[in-house]
Length: 114
Length: 115
Image 1 (cartoon, rainbow over the protein chains, first blue to last red):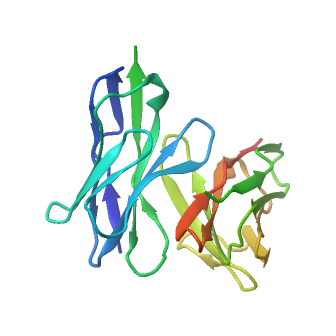
Image 2: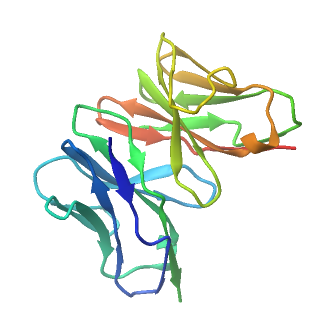
């Protein structure tokens, strides 16, 4: 079984400041890792994912995450946030066995203020 | 990416009635679909895995007789909440696996309020 821990339930930042949203996981098998973003009253949108290869993965809107196997972490970062980045962010994990179900963390609310 | 729709987007019903939520994959065939529920300010909890043409697999603690799932085609799965009660009020989200993308795509969710 897998589990995901998002240590921060809410992260307030000012616009144009850097941000890091933390995610740690536990699993007895190799995993795939995901970050999803959820805007109010909407479903989830995939932000980025790690399946294999380079441990640093990037999204098209400036976010990046680095898979650290030794620390079992997959923290999400952005060097300069915008007001429009305000949303709930979920880290998720699935076993690296073809395709399987996702286990989600509890989410981190990113609040960007002017 | 692939698109998943849900209908209705929000529904309000009286206690004791049944509500059906549709989940459609619009531009891909989804042999597997998932149903989640999300309580306010909480994460998504997997309710069941739905495979086309076969019975759904429910997670522990989810009542299969209360949450009826039908996956009759490769593009449609339905969740029926039978004899709904206020504690069933939640945000229900479905997703489907698009084999071409090797990825799970999520619907926009359905807000169910039971009075």
